[in-house]
Image 1: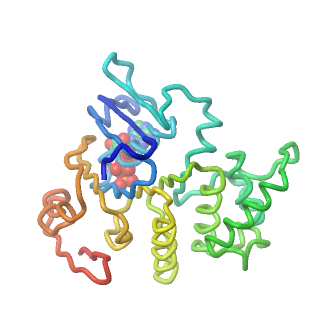
Image 2: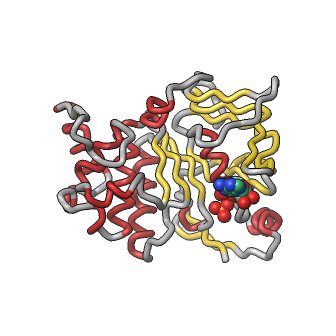
Length: 263
Ligand SMILES: Nc1ncnc2c1ncn2[C@@H]1O[C@H](COP(=O)(O)OP(=O)(O)OP(=O)(O)O)[C@@H](O)[C@H]1O
């Protein structure tokens, strides 16, 4: 699981991050290889999104000599380049212009990390061919001509996953992707994440819904109060006992077809 055969995607050492007046991440140490499948769990406000925002350079670590942040093996990044390579998906759209953009074009914006296909952007034939493959991969060809603003939340999410996939180096960072999805769309999302994981796409998934965690995810990070309090195998950590400790409430767990359900 923590093997060295693949290119390291992420290396964080002694990372502290402040937001506003408060330090909200404390001494984060984390190493992730490309292609790993990880879920990040923890109570509201524990710092999960800030961790992802630290990877995407939307939040910066406090400057301290022992602090290291390496993404794809590099410490310094042109932000636009980095954004293109990181496949980030949240429940929010990249910008309000995205609403007026067709699904097909919204996927292509992933090559530029832009909110719409501005006229000055040069779209190559190779980009169009790849976007078409990705639209098929996320099962979105049927509604690719629709404007994103006219799609269901489930369709939008599939387009945003496609957008994240086109430019990315095979790692998806998903911040609560099942938010606002109805039961059918949640099931579709679960199926899609499973397929992507099986095809070798790496996944870092933040979720409050244990049922979102596909069987392919085998590593769990548990966060509380801005710290990683556990990092290990799903078999050890995704238990009623560990979840009860993490959320400080009694959690019950059942398992079906490799998925776990908590309440
Ligand atoms: N823009 C901001 N300015 C100041 N503090 C912030 C900001 N965004 C988040 N915080 C604070 O940072 C801490 C970590 O928040 P973060 O959003 O990373 O947690 P989270 O685990 O993703 O929470 P949730 O599960 O509710 O989404 C919280 O105390 C939060 O109040």
